[in-house]
Length: 169
Image 1 (spheres, rainbow, N blue to C red):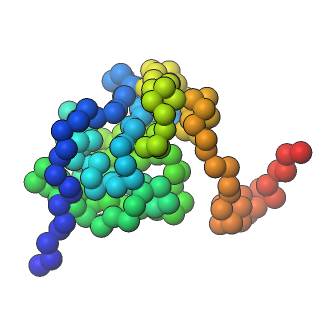
Image 2 (tube, helix red, strand yellow):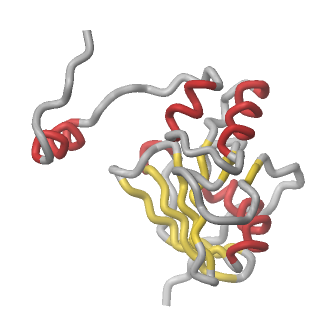
């Protein structure tokens, strides 16, 4: 039997997280998270502890591989196994967190290097009850640069679903 790596020990600092009020789901995200680094295994324990109030124990985190440092497929968090599922096609600005109660929370991820005023604005916008903006638009409004590159596979998928991508002049 192989052992599951443990997430890094908790570091005492305030978690930078804003969630929409409980209620019917609206929009692309349920709030925003501003991690301090790109190390998902280091950031996860604090996030899991706070989200446990709504989700129970965090059992799965889906994330964009290009947005985070390499991570194992499973880590131990708060005495339980959490699956880390990195995808090449997932929106790089979002993590999806699933709990033991079957609930899921989708969070806008504000890049760690973002200046505090811009991060605060993006987090407040994402956590507004009626916000339905796309994650990239929330970051843009806050002045947080978002690369606008479309991967070759995304372009091919677009062409197979309705024609070539539209070119703006």
